[in-house]
Image (cartoon, rainbow, N blue to C red; front, top):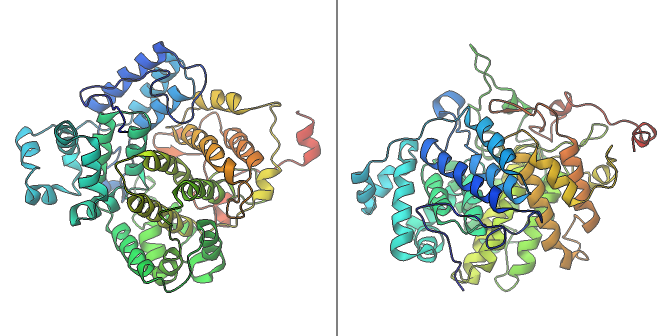
Length: 475
């Protein structure tokens, strides 16, 4: 049965009808109205990127939609949603003007293709996809522009992963919260990215995978193989996260970890590992849960004793994008083969991301030994703390999606490929919010997250964990 999405003309949220896959118990109509208001403001006023590629080397993203919806889903009060939104609005770029004639001409495949990869066309693509959803329905849009295997669909399929998987995050949230306007934004965001190395890597891995030269492996095993391969483990560098503009000292990524590290130095090795991650179209429910579990494994497990638990900024996007696959799994218009292919593409991107951050050793034992200074916390308490955390949404999204991964992993807790076992999810959520500081951001710069968890240098600014006796004194 098709989802009943809200109209493309507005945002509409309800505490029961579209509260999402994992949410707090105390959602209210008042918070829903506030959420609709701030999302409308963002849609009309702000661009999808906060920086220019010429300045930063890559695009930094506008995360307001993800943050505002997540705060609402975690039980945020109207004033909390408003204050978080206003603070993150301070560094946004203005939206580009819609060109109505160009929107109409995007129906011409020649014009559509020419406009791909250009940020100034974001709002034009938004309006175009709104029209397409109204004209043929969201299911036909997903088929035509994402999964049906045509050259056009395969082009956009790769683009939803570009820019550190923000396109698939947006599309997944649109389906989860039943918002057609968000779906149009997600497709538009994908269309204006042009990180060609994702396409090269994904198409190469799929081509090799179809040859089935080597047996298929679980995604978690592929992660471990990447770690054990010296060429993959050493293909990237901490230097990528230390780049700064010579005059202003602004952070930049002129050299990009996946493009200039992984794929320049270890493309054949990583592609060979990635090709072994293959999904059986008749095993989708378990495979979806496995992807989500492995996303938590490679993110929450990326710790480095003796330092406190902290989470890698890039790896956490694996967790926050994985939840969308629960919606793909449930979507009746997708064939089993299409769902399996989406899982394969996503898992292979996670492997590239893991390699780009130095393929960190995954220390679930160190995570499990985390002791919080706040006693008796459950998910309700962690959700509440996350609502007030003043970053741009990465922390709250991470926590909500880890809670969802716990839900989907539960039936498979006995399977060895599910590395993160049930009690550890809550520990990971507590450790994440415990790592939060009072000033997590300055503009678009994060302080609470590790950048490059596989590199010793990345951890030097973090404190070492207190000895258990000292910690227990605070409990």
